[in-house]
Amino acid sequence: MIRPVAIAGVALATLLFPAPAPAAIQDYAGAVPVLVYHGLHRVSDPARDPYSIAPAEFSRQMAMLAADGFHTISIAQYVRFREGNVAQLPDRPILITFDDGRADSFQAADPVLARYGLRATMFVITANADRAEPGYLGWSQLARMAASGRWDVQEHAHAGHVLIPTGPHGATGPFYANLLYRNGVRETFTDFKRRVTGDVLTGLRLLQSHIPGYQPFAFAVPYGSYGQVHTNYAPIPGWEGPWLWHTFNVIFIQDRPRYNTPGNPIGQRYGIHSRTTAASLEAWLIQALPRSAWIVPPPPKPPAVKRPARPRRPSLRRLRVSRHRVLMVLKAPAKTRLRASRRRAGRRHRTTVRVTPGGRVRDRRLRAGTTYIYSVVAVSRAGVRSPALRVRVHTRA
Image (cartoon, rainbow, N blue to C red; front, side, top):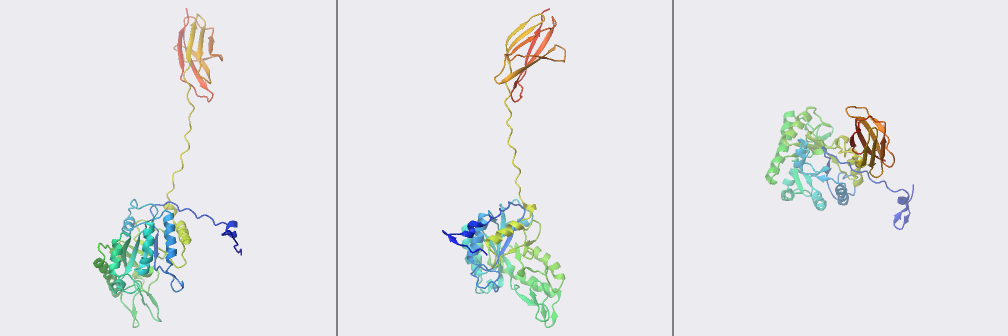
């Protein structure tokens, strides 16, 4: 083990083994990660309070999200995303949620969210709000939160966020996932449905009564279980899941944390616990992002190839025609050489004609009384040819 030695305020181990730079967050579209927090207070015993984190750590996590370019969305935006409307989302969308309606969560989180321009959704146990349970937000506080524009308020349960007897020998399980076991007998499935729907709809009606503008967009299932993980009666999840997502638009659980995609009424959440740090949260956001959601920038266009300039057309300075000879004096553009050819009028066959470095053409042994067409081009050092100079002559008879 290396013991760091402080040198001018810098640990020697840090100098020798600098920490690697964090991986970059890939831009993405068509996917939304959802985080779930519970309590925000100083945690003295993580074993007894595993789902709470210190306010300072929460602040570091929000600073990381802001620095990495994440943009928080409302629960209404998430519902539109679930229905397939991806275009309305900001870059790098993320949904931040809190469970239970705890007062310490709001009091510690609100100023941090305001500082970084973020927002969150609070899932409330309405029975606690209704009886003004100590440590939980009351109706007046929840109404002010919803009116602030920084918080959405949705249902977590009414009185069903509890464990109930599910079998003999003291077996217990979540209220929403099991038949109630009492006096040696389990309740009927009909009684179970009545108990669960009654609890959910009581909470929904209370929210409608106390939160102006409330709409039942989402439901966070207590303990993340409606029987899909474990139940004492197999038909429960097959009935309860569809009933919940028809009553609400989406339900949230956290048994398989991953980025959510459109079309799925079941939203998965990544649970923040007492040992979650900003670095570990960032690592999960990087690693869990599916490649199918990556926005890959198009490859850069190759630099445009600059074509060499085309030389100007050569010019004819002097022409002399006799019976069997043609003399031409040509002027070539700078840094070019001249090439010439001729053909007889009405014929396609061409004959190359020599051009001197000084631009002179002396063509002999021509037929008398014949029309010839000369073509002269200037060729640059890059091999680019100029427009052709055409000269039509008729030898003397």
